[in-house]
Image (cartoon, rainbow, N blue to C red; front, side, top):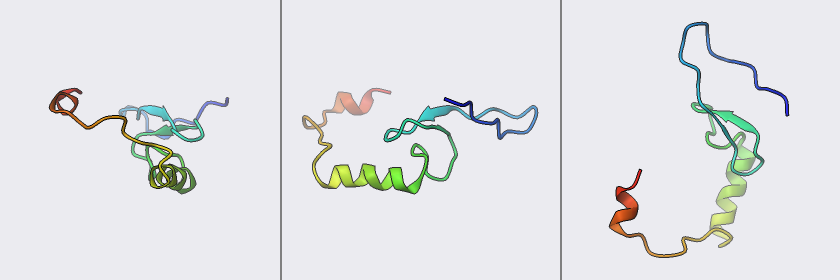
Length: 68
């Protein structure tokens, strides 16, 4: 996999890079569709929620909300 170019000017804080949850391409925080790399990956993820491919396995509890 090729390294992504460094889009930050010299001396500024570098963005954190994370893999897109759909295609695994690296995406910098602050990108337009973050955490997805493109609108296409964002739409695929939304469709998976809408069709029931993704589900929350149990009801949320207060301790889930307290965790970071």
